[in-house]
Image (tube, rainbow, N blue to C red; front, side):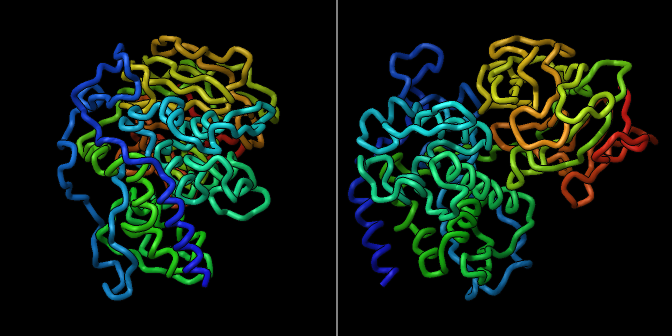
Length: 444
């Protein structure tokens, strides 16, 4: 009976969605002066295209030998490309305010207080998309699929629109935070060949089909945490979430950029993020870039004597020249390619930067320019420190992967445990330690 009701609900939601928009035309828009900001942006201005819109792509998959027999595996249907999960170049195609003007959804009038500030529904989606680096188009489609918030003015579910029924996560912001984290978890586990089965809501294990891609893995993980296998199979099929996405935005693979992170990618030259002659503590090895579900893209550094959450007197500095595209809520995003978009190319995240003295958005910086003072601002922390991470085309780049940090010749590595790790330069080696300790001191 539950399955029948769910199918009827899904049918109703799909029936209420607006007609699909036309597939993007990559060649007809100037992103710096066109009259129609909702028109498609030519991705050639953001990233060299590797395929034409509508062209079938071959998605790389891990080695199938590690997986369960085919008759035990879950769905192999590819729902979205990798570039539709991350807050990458193709996310520039969406202007939410303009897009939602033609819809009559609950999201248009929704407001919620977040960290003492009243935010609109679109502001909440934007904040979560930026923080977690998850495509806002995907978040909108999930809201529509799960609760009809894009097209229905009075949806039945308003407290738990992403269907995660835990009291702490009531309200749009917390629902999206949980969802974005789990989308990232599935995506980055798949990218690192670290998962072969999903854990369903009833505790049973569902073997993964090796033919899927990372973007699909993110969605499969999200739905697995909410439903049993019969409902999960529908959600991840071409009749489930995929159909709702297509009704809102068109065929998802028309937005694909493959590969999102080129195999030959190299890190630009970066310095340690503090002044020459200073000694800081390396307090955190590779761990989540934003929340624990993302790739282990971050390292932590602390300055001076431990003083709890009192902002440090020392300055965190720009490790490379760039443009500050965002500076708010403790976070500073430094865009290294200078195009003004955090969704394209290399960007650096400086987190826990205190308000006092923090660099302003729009600032053009040279290497060594002041970013801000390490503090506890912007997230949970037991002491003032700098949380330092990298993204490329919106994807979190692991500090313990094939492209580790290189900071003045110091190379990052991990141990397989979050926050554990090393910085190595020739014969010198510094170990991460969550305190001030001779073993973790590093001098620039």
